Image 1 (cartoon, one colour):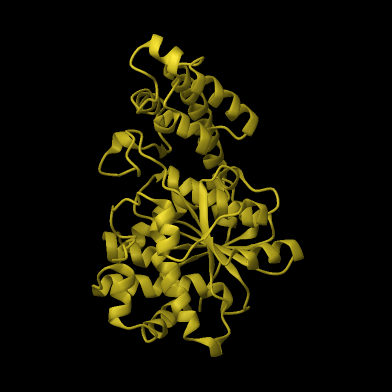
Image 2 (cartoon, rainbow, N blue to C red):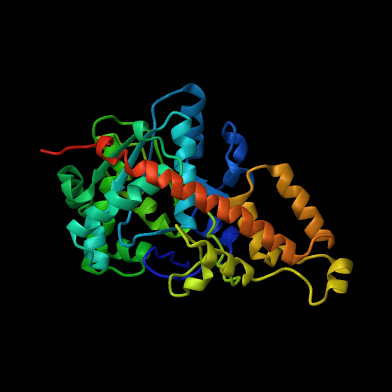
Length: 362
């Protein structure tokens, strides 16, 4: 029986190779793209759909777009969101027209956040945070889902192109709110093509793949409209600091947020699951079980850009020449720098919000 990836649940994906096979994904090949970013180089981006067409657009300088969304349900973001934005930035830097939608309707329907509150959170924090993480505000187009009647109208059209059983097979179940949310996301994903048909890529965590699959189904059944099926890339989940596969909001001590107080940040890292041995003597002899060390995982995924620097630390820790305490100290120092940099850029980005390019709808 095929496993369902549900973007609305907390179910963990335990076998990425199996996911590639079960859901018809292609293993990610960083050689397709010029100057792949850190996540691409290190295998954090592990799969995708229709990446050749995006590679061709980049190499031949043909028009394409990259799109992501904001769910304004909290006043902080987690490291998984940071990974998405880094990948959006990669494509923006390589010629993609960039769109960021604020999913205020979905936040209201799924999380009970009013449109007014969702708008406030997006303008005060989420949009500036995305800019602080690297998006070029001059090259990014923003819009609020609740103001985009074209997306709303297309959601109704999309609902006519799928059956209830098909929806259940993709999402596991089909309550009205979930159907409305999913079909609206189809409209969002295709919105940049309403004016100009062109390829597009959606960077997401693998738990969001159902939205991509549903959109591709709608496109395949709407051939007369001439849409390109969306391409996508998928990054692995950022493991929780306690070693579980995915950070969970139900366990605040298991994940790092942006922004995060330095005292809390250091405390979490120092308590993170270690790959060190039970005694220093064993550690020097056997070396670290580096694959289970969460401080090293932070260094690999988020905190060290230079591959040579990372390999040097990896080799020393793996051989036992470096201890888990030393690894955690390095992670604490670099995480503090990350937080300082984010907070400074966030302050500057907030001043840019009134000047941003928002789509205005009649």
